[in-house]
Length: 125
Image (cartoon, rainbow, N blue to C red; front, side, top):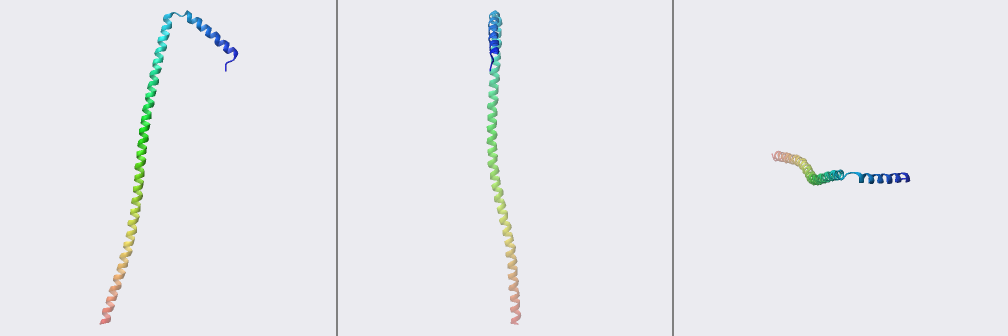
């Protein structure tokens, strides 16, 4: 907020600027206008450049998000495949354990039949 003395000072500066402006030759005014116009054009070009950079960044950011989403989906599929392979491996190991048990049982039963056959053979003699 401006104080009264600052407001008065600003008013005096405006009056002085107006007086000096009247005293400045026209060619200096046009040079100043040309200079300011060129500065405005430079600033417009700079703003346009920044807008273009921002658009390119947004495009790259969007592409990166799409790639990340694609990779996330692939990772989920891979995780499901790994879980399926682990489950299949667990089942195979269970079947192998069952096969060993079944094979051992068959050997025992076969030995029992052999013993029974031998026993019967000797009993018939």
